[in-house]
Image (tube, rainbow, N blue to C red; front, side):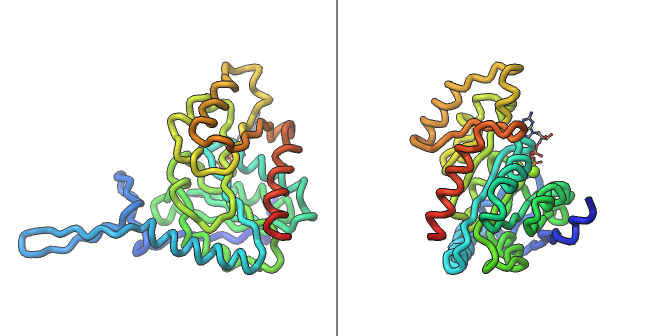
Length: 260
Ligand SMILES: Nc1nc2c(ncn2[C@@H]2O[C@H](COP(=O)(O)OP(=O)(O)OP(=O)(O)O)[C@@H](O)[C@H]2O)c(=O)[nH]1
Ligand SMILES: [Mg+2]
């Protein structure tokens, strides 16, 4: 499999100035700078998310000029993002010219798997920084600099496995998809609503395992409908490719709407 590694670019995210270090307290929404004034410490809080949004908009303009559709795929660790993407790429390439940016804290395992599709793959690792749990706009922007956007119709970003933080960061994408595997339990949308509010479609993955679980499909659908009325929900199995016609149909419709 090392044959494919020459197609993979590996990047380390390491930028202490732009992003606070993870120190147990989760504070990536603010850049906190402390100044001493006499005996008083004045905390100047600046919204990092504002800076992220400006950068994301800049990238969105570039993607529009270059006619590249960008999909941000998010989920908890292990829901099946990479497996779904492997099967998706096999179906839509070479009709659509694809590239992938994949974020993980450590390893190039996912990049190795996705590079088998023949698409250019960039692996971002955040471990040098203490393990950021999401991809921010400036990290994606630097990865995009290694891609030839003129040769890409669809750029897929597999975000770092996490059902919370990635939803907070705009990365200049056109659409967002959340993968929820049926092994995670039907209460997850209600417990992590931001992700489902922010996404444009939900993939309910691993339905091949339903016979072995007590997963309540009606309850999860009703819960997602309460959080994000009208959002499409596709029941799929990345193992058997059940439900893939509907999912691929939705994806290609979105991409073609931008490219036409
Ligand atoms: N039975 C079954 N297993 C699946 C399915 N999709 C993925 N898996 C398995 O679930 C495990 C995790 O899948 P991945 O595709 O690596 O998940 P991921 O979301 O990319 O994981 P991270 O990148 O680590 O967050 C692997 O062992 C897959 O083979 C599915 O539809 N059915
Ligand atoms: Mg993965």
